[in-house]
Image (cartoon, rainbow, N blue to C red; front, side, top):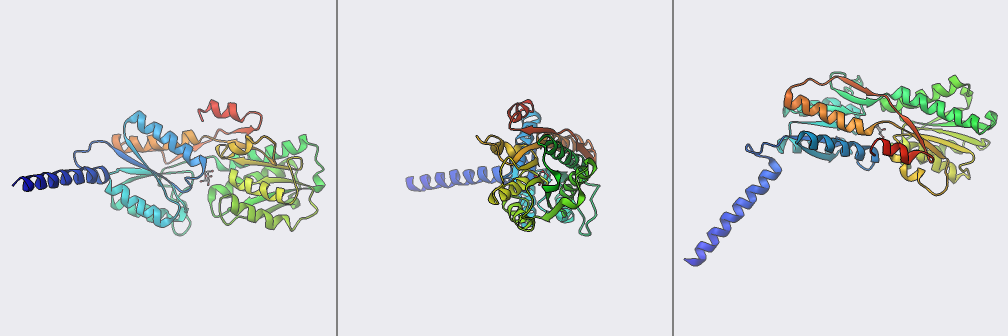
Length: 334
Ligand code: FCA
């Protein structure tokens, strides 16, 4: 008799433990806490970690649970939406690994009645048309690219380089609209400032990370062995870092390379190095605003039925270099 009692107590305890776990994962009707997701394509980039940190700030302020997920490819993205829905989430912010997943992401989200806000990279239809009906928070891409070009030109002039022996290495990623607009903005600005168009060389990168950009840059450098100074353009810090690393492999140094990235937060380790490199600086936009604002918009939509703006463009950017990066990051609370 005693044994039977012990066994049934154990079974009951086990069952309730199981249900506690099940509730924690799947959510339950009496679980009142609102859940929202924040899905990013490249969680290894400090840019996205910063967005997450500020999305967490919004979650704390408005008292909801933020579920952060890495979605490096299409399969993981669609699976993540299933998991979010199963956990009882009501919507998510996403930086998609591929803009062309837009229609598939929206179809799945709609099937679960989840609200969606995009951040950084705009969704495209399968035919490549921008899905302007899905709310988007992003940086002013052409504008920041133009600033990159102007700053490169200014620094080149400051150093008194001979333009005849100088070239621009522009690492492109034209299939990503924001990247295309940034890089082309930079090239346009350089031309406007007077840099010879014939000395601006482009090379596409296969992946938007340092190894991809390094390969692309290497293939470009071998074609122009006579160039003595390089200006490096790319859509973000990692792309420019890959370009700069390639120039180092060919014997260039801080004295004859100027690279200016975009993102800022991804350049901190480089700018903190004890010795200057060809990576001169970075344009720091507002990952804090992107993370907080997109999450706050989703919260207001889900919980107060406040329709979000369809397009929020974040425009400020500050040039950070070895001299000022600590102060500038601090000013933004980064
Ligand atoms: C794109 C880039 C990121 C970041 C973001 C704002 O998603 O891949 O590095 O620049 O835009």
